[in-house]
Length: 112
Length: 111
Image (cartoon, rainbow over all chains, first blue to last red; front, side, top):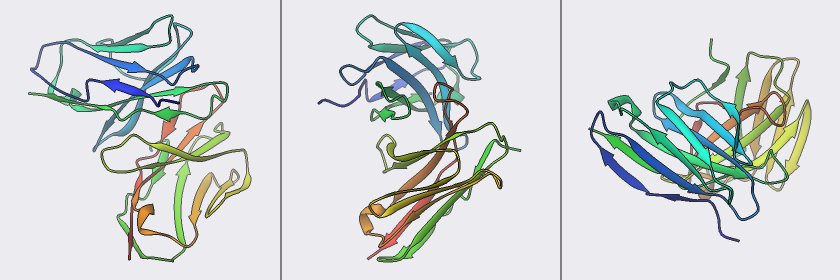
């Protein structure tokens, strides 16, 4: 069974631009969660989608948004990028056992 | 006060040692406790999860939860160089609630 895939793996953007990251969950998994990981703040929850509906949301500004498609693939978007948005963005999927989250390799975003 | 605290390390031990990794938390509403391992440049990998207080063993790994003290532990027996990674504790109030991660402890097992 293929794992969670994330594209692109690396991205360099300029302050003020917007970016869209993509996540394909494990086949059959309907829950997709997004996290931001930085050296200073650690791993922080952004949001979770289940069957195309946002189920949980973290404490991030409205510049961070996401969506999930009918095939469970998910995208997250960050508008008006700031230098502080430089981070590793991780996606995780879970199936019937909601406690078992499987993480992708992440997308390394650098904002200059 | 942060919701979850964890000694960042780095923790360095000789091969074969017993490793103890710990987290403390402040909110008694947490009921689900997970441990993840993250290798450099990889996503976290779930090691095990427990519900409420008690112990759970899986091979060389034992997770322990003491809800009265708001303290959770992960023990690694017969540590191996391949165990060198960052270990993250994670907590949830309900099985469908968002996951709160600790900052992680960096572990190095020296051959």
